[in-house]
Image (cartoon, rainbow, N blue to C red):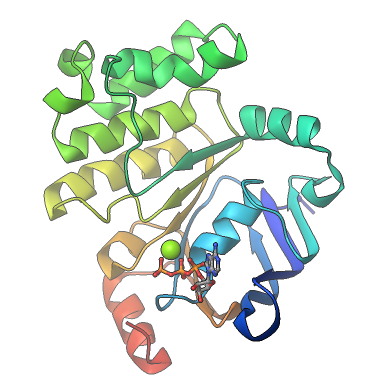
Length: 243
Ligand SMILES: Nc1ncnc2c1ncn2[C@@H]1O[C@H](COP(=O)(O)OP(=O)(O)OP(=O)(O)O)[C@@H](O)[C@H]1O
Ligand SMILES: [Mg+2]
């Protein structure tokens, strides 16, 4: 059987200590299928961002394991973890986090430049093409709309050809048209470019673009859905009593 692109096993994350302790992840088991687009949903505070940060190696677990492919992140030292993050993982944040003094094109290749890696021109060309931003690449972020900036951020996350891209509410600041363009881009990253995308969203319409949906509640998986549609997701959210 093909290994999952990423998985968590009995993952626990506790923030704080004593009376102030919060169990953000409560022994969660979850798998993200390779070359699939998965939406992660659930009420505010259910542990979605924490799960993404821990799976991407941006934060560490209190106990349990997380894997990218067959590599157990919890066994890696800081140096190896940095390398793995750089080579195998992309991350898209709700706030685009672009560098204001660089052009769109420079922002896309920035992580490679920092890592001292040569961009693969064919690959970069392909992802820049599919952002639909060819004519805006010499512009700075302040000269782009929110939706355009987020597509630059998504292209940046893809620049190193990561195996998996985690996105935390990437459409949270976008209107419905800009969201649709970004989601279409992410879907293409999976179905045309063979990447794996895991996206946190509160939006049933956004989840409808995904191949799978995973629902969290109190730091655990409470439900999963194959082939989500906006209507099915809304129904499920109602029955789970989430937002
Ligand atoms: N750095 C932190 N210190 C203390 N508690 C934290 C920290 N980060 C998250 N938490 C707590 O962990 C729980 C899960 O938070 P998390 O951010 O993962 O939720 P979420 O599902 O992403 O919510 P939202 O939909 O609002 O973004 C919450 O109770 C939150 O208050
Ligand atoms: Mg969050």
